[in-house]
Image (cartoon, rainbow, N blue to C red):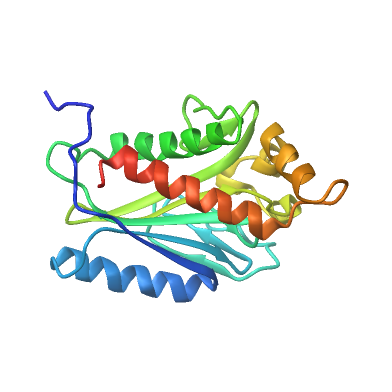
Length: 229
């Protein structure tokens, strides 16, 4: 029986792409995927904010994004339609699933736990929801997850709403759900409120600072969860 304790692996290359178009980062993922399958590069974690876009996964209905005012792109990841845009942290691991961890259900649960542990660092209680992939805060969904795997190298990943403009979900049913179910991390954290007050009393926290903090925490949690040095 495989152990739940992760095997220590070589260092993970964390690549912060800032803000990029979805098409540009999709091409980078494809290039990295081919190189990783060939054994030419180490495992990587891309961190990025996208320009506004809706992506459609393999389970998407034909008309699920018909009224979206943003570009719509169909891709090979699992799941249905979801939104990416400013204020949302998208993490794309391009990693080889090692022997003993080649189980897609386990990989999805591991990604969920990365997000749950990241939220915990900001005093937010995240949870799983029976029958759904992703992470929720109470009755609201804060993170969508969709992956693909080729020769046991995983790509695509997760989208965590940090300071996302939630009205962007209003023109379609994200992951087949009501747009009203979506939430963002910044609306739930006492620690974030304290950080805001400590910076400039009475002033909002710069979104870029919160995003930078979230990236740092998620990368650290991801390394620990997947056993990277």
